[in-house]
Length: 239
Image (cartoon, rainbow, N blue to C red; front, side, top):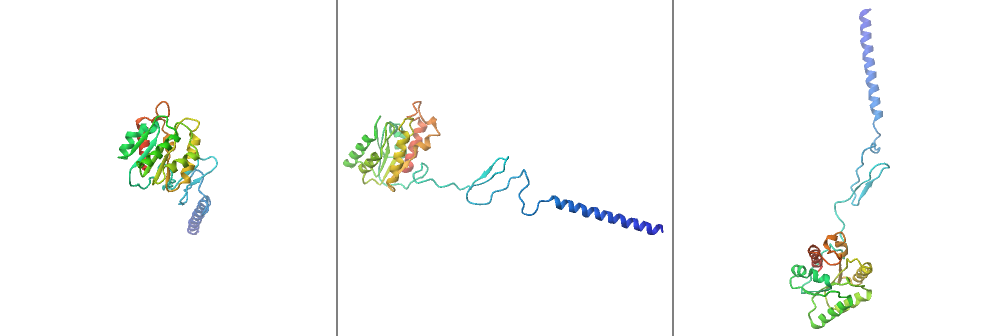
């Protein structure tokens, strides 16, 4: 009897161990999230591999935003868009800002004909361009840097394009000047360029220079050497 009792005890112990093991497995399975469930609290889900930016937002957490590594191409009038070179000489007409950048511009564009004058108005610049065209001195590319000293209107742009008739490209430089006419001048220049696609382009000096107050002298109008070089380089991308 003692022998049978010992076997029964061993079998009973094994049964208990087996039951405990099964119970442990059941508890582990219940603690796991169901297949396809979202991530546990405290984790950040990865965005899908789409071409556009995506974000994950959860109340109480910091929003994580990711974007494709390929940057969108700028518009054709952006200050960062290079243009195809046009053969032939370059003429540049402007005000005192043109005088600030003249050495830099002529270094960037050898042979450029630069005509700058302190306090020059846009209307006067139209006359200069018309005179150069009549004398045969107007280049294949015309750079117009005017508007620092006063307003520019839609009719001014049209008159400049008429004066420059026959020029392959006209590069209009917008303004960064702390004056009441800044916004209206830049709007007129942008709209004017849009009316002459394929010929007129906009060098967006305002967008390029606005984050760089150190490029300007204390009057916030004229240029320090770094600003003069930046503007000359911008114009050279189009001319």
